[in-house]
Amino acid sequence: MTAHANKDITRPNVYFDSRFGLDAAKILPGQYYATQRNMLLVTVTGACITACIRDKVSGIGGMNNYMLPDEDTVNFKSEVYGIKAMDTLINDLIQMGAAPENLEAKVFGASNMLNDAQSIAAAARNTQFVFDYLKTRNIQVVATDVQDVYPRKIYFFVNTGKVMVKKLRNMHNETIINRESEYTQRFALAQFNRAEHLLAHTPSQHEVFDIQFDTIDAEVM
Image (tube, rainbow, N blue to C red; front, side, top):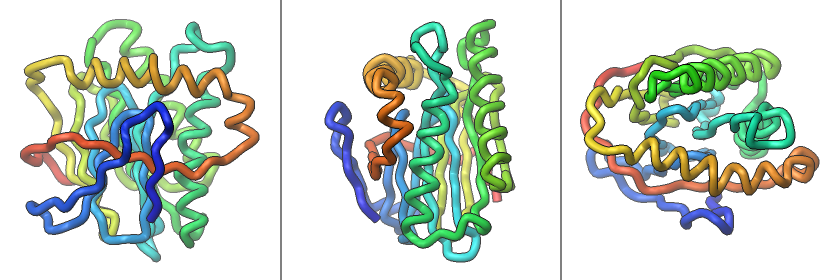
């Protein structure tokens, strides 16, 4: 396992989760984490997509959290960023020893929290992209919980592949919306301006962040 931070993003945070008795990594929008260890990967996802990718034989796995930009705000197809986000995670898993033919995915997020036409369209675009991408990589999707109007808290147990999901049916503030908005403005758009470089170069960055979690709503085996 390695952990590095983009110069514009807070340093990674890995901690011990006493509730589950595991080392854990917490991931904010625009980040990903890959590991060979028995770890817990956690995130909150609203409009973003979270993909949990794992080698079902070796147990090597990882998680990302990203969103396709609105094409009105960038000068290239938004899929470019999604491809990079997925490629980077999967390539790191393979470098760690995961076998491409053993990879499987569980996909969450793409909530239309604002429940307006733009939010609904963005949710559909993010969902369609990730399923199309995984199909082109011949990675089977074994579980999914996407769209709807609720953000989600995700717990991914890398060793077993188990995922626990909590839908946040009552939001007491706009933290998730503000966090994802900041991501698209501060982190993602800075990367979009270097799209051609990103496509030609595969960095190795694992970036993890601090988010608080509470009770579990459901389990996705």
